[in-house]
Length: 209
Image 1 (tube, helix red, strand yellow):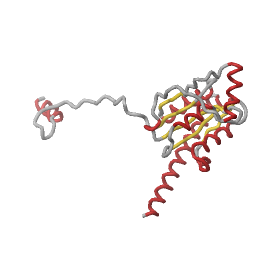
Image 2 (spheres, one colour):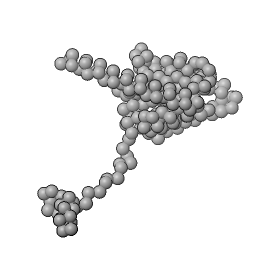
Image 3 (cartoon, one colour):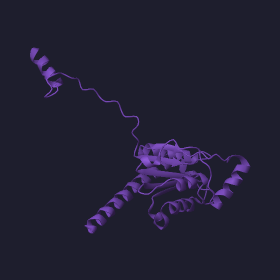
Image 4 (spheres, one colour):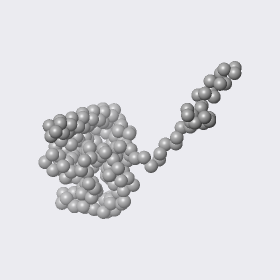
């Protein structure tokens, strides 16, 4: 019994200090930011559904963009389409998360007549995304989401926007089993693209030496 007590005391002794101290688990730092941020605008809730699923898959923080302009009702729908087609910006409520503290940003938008929403266009214009790993996702009832995501990619990266991984979805894709499969595929493709980009950067660095 005495031997067991001495063994326990030895385990709790701080080596070199000569005194006993119990090592306790440190509380998680609540100020530490996640590496991934999902930023999105959603009017009818479809893009919100996808954003939540992506946040779970990527272990990401969520930032919902709030457009201060009323987009509800028939009048709101009409102005939304006109503003999206014209490439208009809007006034957003302040963000809860600082995009500059994230390495990976996934940006989601509905497709409004084949165009990026003013809220997402404004986010892209007002925030530097240089050096960030970007992914794009979007939803639409029937058609136009591919062109909307291509538009967003060009806003972010110009002619290199075609290299940005995208997840285009239609309303029929939002069923739980279908959405889960598509998100799994996007997750794999995103990580593969990221690994390829890292390898290219390493090769270029080696060649420059």
